[in-house]
Structures are given as C-alpha cells and as structure tokens.
Image 1: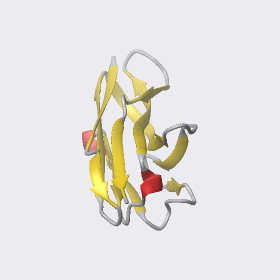
Image 2: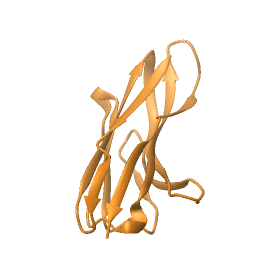
Image 3: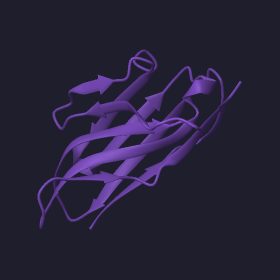
Length: 120
C-alpha cells in the first residue's frame, strides 16, 4: 500500500509565500512523475506542476513565473515553492505520484489534499 501525505498548506496574505511538501511511503519500488494539482472552489481540478524522476518540469502557464517544483528521490518527496501568491491561487492542492510498487505495476496515487487560502 502506498500513501501520499501533504503538508504546508495554510492561510497567507496576497504576495506571500508557502512551501508544500508531499511524502510518499509504503511498498515503493520507484516513483516516476510526481506533481501537484489544485481545485479552486466551484472549479475543476487543474494541473499546477509536474516533475519527472530526472527533473524535467512542466508548469501551468498561470503559475510558471511564481512557482517552483522540486523533488528528493531519496526521500520520495516532492515540493512546491509558491511565491507572490494571489487570491486566485486559493484552493485544495493535491499531490500525485506515479508509483511502481514491489507487487504491482505503475499506479497513479493521489494525496488527500492540503488547503491553501490566499487573502487579499
């Protein structure tokens, strides 16, 4: 069984910064792509950023200049550094990971989500 546990969400004023973390644990052989999605109130879930095991990144256009994704493969952890936050960044941020476990092929796992609220 694989679990993703996110942390680092909270309330921040516009212009502020937050750093989200997501640690994967369990029967993990290897993790390929890791990343973050978010869902704003009343809107569909959308991609924020993803990073390959080798470090190749892809960002949503709306966040590219303000957000940095990184990962620590040894710790099975992905990070999201968010700067110059805007009220429209408010939402639940979900971690994803493509995990190869010891007993099964690639499975996409999702975290439970962490709430980010940006006040104006």
